[in-house]
Length: 196
Image (cartoon, rainbow, N blue to C red; front, top):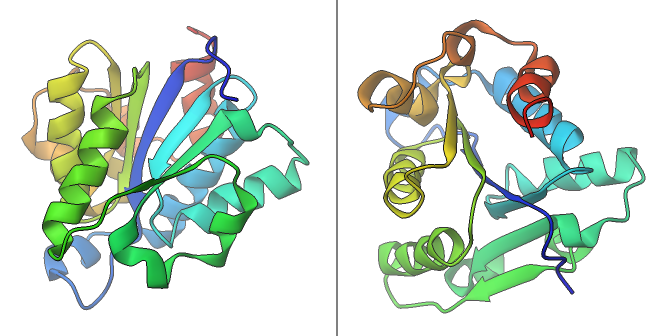
């Protein structure tokens, strides 16, 4: 059972794929993406519930943090997956108790749209964190702002790719640390823990 008192943090993240649009891979900082996802999970999991769409490059990192910290806080993590990708789910999905499978359509984009709508639109969020990624980051950012206009947004431009495009092209309260601060643990401590 998911406890009600925890505030939710939304994570939109992925490591761009070389075969996709080069504008994402060309600016992506893969090390920064991995470091920031690990730092986010390490910093917030004891205090918040982390909700994300199960990109195969991200789910193993969150599982890694749970294993390393020896955390048995399954109610602090909720993983959304579209049944469209059922044959490609990372084996790490089996490590999570709260996996929300959303219906599949014959169309990839319609299936992803439904998953995003259920994931973002049916939960309350304290903040959204956007890391690396491709066009999905931009789509999820717009959807997140539409459903949660008062929530904090943290698009980490320092990770490049879709998150840098969000930082550069969308209107929100800009913070130079999102571009320049690679000390992700202290960044998330300052933004999400100290002012909780």
